[in-house]
Amino acid sequence: MTCTSLALFGSSVAGASGINPLKPVDTSSPRATVKSLLDAIDRTEKAYAGYHANQNSITQRAAKREQDKLLRMLDLSEIASSLRAGAGRDALVFLVDIIKRLDLPNLDTIPDAAAVKAKDGPSKWRFPETELVIARVDKGPRTGEYLFAPKTIERAGEFHELIAGFPVKLQTRFASWSIIHTQDHGWLIPHAWVDGLPESLKLTFLDTPIWKICLTLLCAVVCAGLVFGWLRLRRNMAGDDTLSVSFRAFLDVAFLIGILFGFEYFVNDQVNLLGRFALVFASAITVCIYLASAWAAWIASCLIAELMLLTPAFYDDKMNAHWLRVTAGMIGIFGGGFILAYGTQKMGLPLLGLLAGLGVGGIAVALAAQSSIENLIAGANLYSDRPLKIGDLFRYGDVLGFVESIGLRSTRIRGLDRTLISVPNTELAKTTVTNLSDRDQMLFRHRLDLRYETSSDQLRYFVHAAQDYLARHKSVSKDLIPSRVHVVAFESSAITIEVFAYIKTKERSEFLNLQQELLLQLAEFVHDAGTGFAFPSQTIYLTRDSGIDPNRKQELGGLMAQNDRNDSRV
Image 1 (cartoon, rainbow, N blue to C red):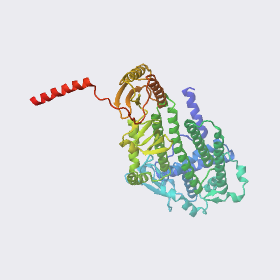
Image 2: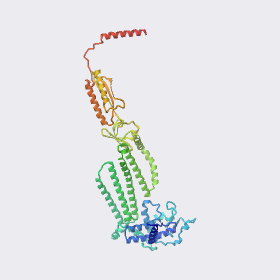
Image 3: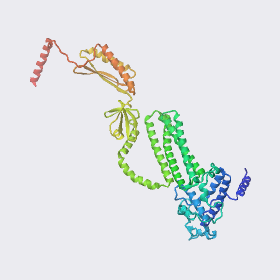
Image 4: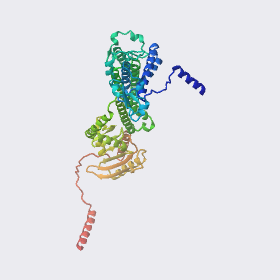
């Protein structure tokens, strides 16, 4: 499309409507705001008349756009952002009905832009003989604009009750906006259905027609049924592993959030709630959406962690996997807390005051939870130093077991008798911990007791055979201290031989098998040497001692005499 054709197209659109749709609402002075208000009322009523004559989504959106321009003339800065739409529409309907019943002054008597720019220009203007005030905004993105003051908006319902019975002085298409908008609804609900309702259902409760309240509650029941049905349907999804459980939980919360947004859209745009019931609904649906969003943030962080665990960097590292889950959980908690904090701010709660209160209370909580904080820091130290990993066999004092989990407060140990032991992280960080799973090799060290009847030749045969066997065995280490077999002691009832070697394995089950193999082979060497293992016993000798050999006695006598002569010389 050429520039010329674009210009012709734009002029044709402007000519068809007579109004530039991009023209902003003029609120530069009290006079401009009042004039914009009267013009917008006329355009809005035309749009709503067109919508009622031809009910569809296009005409409804057109009417809503015109109403939104009217809302631009209200200073809603003091109303919680989550409630502004409902509270603004309520106040707008009341203000329009009020203005229709007032004796409006001539526009020339209302301060214009020139008066505003003057040195002593007015900061606000009041409708004659009323408390309706148009005031200049002094802060925020709309600074300098003249809008209906927050106090006027707050008391609009009160003013409407006082003047509702007075005659209409401003000739318009609708005598009462409050009646029209209270019973109004979206294009998905046919007018014929509403017109055919009993008059009792058209009565109002909490400023809302009873039929709208009933329809809202019915929609809530339908949404609850959809959520319940989804939960029953997804029970058939396979997989009990952590990733599958996290994925199903994420689908659940995503479905719930979708239902909540759909519910909110239908009630706000189709049922078109107004009044105090609308404010109650807006607060309730906002709370539900932000709670579900906080839940979704936590589940999403856990799901991302489980997906990361499928990567090679985490697949075989149980310690990293455990702390990734812990970190993801903490990120999810902080993320959910941020969403809830943002939600409270949107609902108009004093977030800064709440945080200040939490800060003061946090000191008391920190003092009360001092041990928990110490355990948390100790847990982080255990992760950084890594003396233990998930699945490690270790000894702590009299406790021997496998590490099952390292939490924020304590470490859980599965004992060899399958009992579960919880040890505070601070105790593990302060004491000596023996990690049996981190051994690169395992020690084979045994003392064999042989009978005293074993001869020196038999001992030499056993030592040589055992040493040669260990040197040739493929699972015995040659890198560290070499294997050795030595006669180390003559005990009270046995000759003790020590066998020392390192076995090249980290797995305890494999070590036990190799240890069994070595011990059985050593037993065979003992049998081959013609001797046997000793056991605690006492030997009674019944033979007489033959004494010293005569030749040896004579030799010893000569040595003793020589020693005596040497001593006498000294």
